[in-house]
Image 1 (cartoon, rainbow, N blue to C red):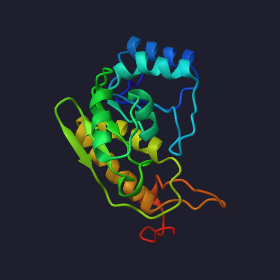
Image 2 (cartoon, rainbow, N blue to C red):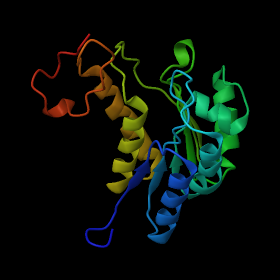
Image 3 (tube, helix red, strand yellow):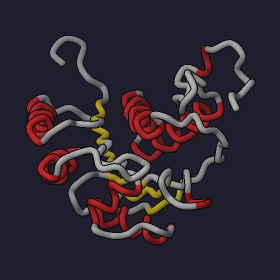
Length: 205
């Protein structure tokens, strides 16, 4: 922070309330901007990952510091108390979540049913947008949400505004899904370095 500076920052899974509060203190101390918060509370399959006190700390201390917040379906449900079943539900949730103090919200549709998978909803207080990209048929989707929030932070570090950064990040993740890594016998990760790999253009089934 003191030597080369920070042009962008994102948070992912933070284990407990103490860690969340310390991260928030350091973000404030060093005026770290832009900040993208991926409020990792529940997996895309619905498994709860954090204790209630950590979730409360994220809600009260970290979310108000974020320029962009990227909850998945289940995290949006925790933050709003709503059940998300439709696009209209996602739009309502995005608007409600923004009242927690963040600059913009991207409610991710990866955990949504049917055709809503991969459809995200953006709200920044003025602009309510539905962001759709090509749906890539692959089982190798591990790390999709973390990759998206990191890519948003990287795009903002390069100078893009939050909305443009999000659109670019979604395009990057779509291509990373098109060129995933089939590692082992289970669900592999998205292909973060697909532009550098030989065999590009030969998607993994």
